[in-house]
Length: 580
Image (cartoon, rainbow, N blue to C red; front, side, top):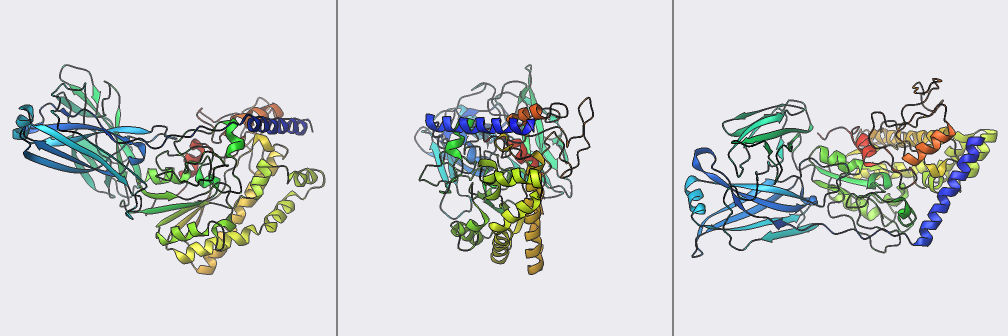
């Protein structure tokens, strides 16, 4: 009873803070548009094999271009304007390994343009260079780019080595099939460098042979692996194969092993698919912006990782240029990035319900658009709204929880609430439509367990039981549609258990302990920081804080502890099978 009274006071405080934020007009700043392509100083490398050299062309790209093939055009001209030679490169550029989330707006990739000995001598003798870089981000190659940016230089004379500091060319992102090998030139630098592999790839084998990096992929492996190259200039310390990197900084070479780049992935669903609580540039939503970001009936996808909208009052509905792929937040984006997928669009809308996406719903036109794009995979989390939204954000369903404390019957109460909104029927209607209109494999991610600090009027086990019943309904609806269509394309994916740090018996096994009195709990908590503080106060003899080994909680704090953090989404993405 004491814990329940404390929870009432804490929930009242949370609501009061939201009111204060609303009164103060706490509005997130408008987040900047994508960066522009910009060409840096072109430099001539030190001599490489057989007396040749390379032009090193650093280009600053918007982060949304990472992992995509970009053209680079280079012309060598004599002082009289005559074209001596020209080059057109198409390289899969990359920002090394994306962070989770990825806060960078831009990255630098140093292109290597190989020159014969004769051309290298001519450049040293005064040939001018003209460069054009950049292009368009056209996700599904329909001729309508989501983002475009380019830059070009006037004729210029390249800097000669040592040039612009210690500069080395970047290694393009590599993509090969199972059991295949790839061989590429080692980076060219402004100093003569001897290269070695400082860190071996996690999967497969690599070696340096005759000035080239050779990688062999293992059979049966699909996913991303990396290695690190490190070079030692003559008489100087180590440098890395990164644009302008300082001595000793490691530079990973990313390698995607598996399917061809033509895999088409689309995502739909609610805030758990959209990555609510993160803006389109990867920045986290602060707590005082929750009132302004909370999903509303306008369905404008505010404050979600796949969106440019930063307020639920906005009349504009604008997805991010790359649908949130580069910020690497949502479980859908992290899964796509792990397997090198670039034909990716996340159409999820925070606050949406199954009825919105099914035939006749307000978002059904988007469902039809996705179906027309013939995806290989559809990713979604859907079904929690409006039941869990009312529970976690409002007071409307509190009576059910309080009455069941006194009289029991909580499961029946929840099942009646599901039936009231026709949850299972609407899920089946949406699933059946997608199965009928596409040939896609459809991954249905179930919901994670989150214990919000704003909803502790419920017992912890009540919230866990509600989530369990929700996930069972998703699985049952998928099973019935698969049975009716004699197929298996609807595949239910369960996220890992998000430990609470207290006992969840009988809903979930609680055999872990970290207390002196050996009270059983489900494991070291991965819940949000404010939730952990409240749980520790209410269960001070048994609570087990976490995450184990340190690191970020799996649930964000900005929404009082409801949606996964980027770290939590990473856990969810890890459960989804690799694309075939």
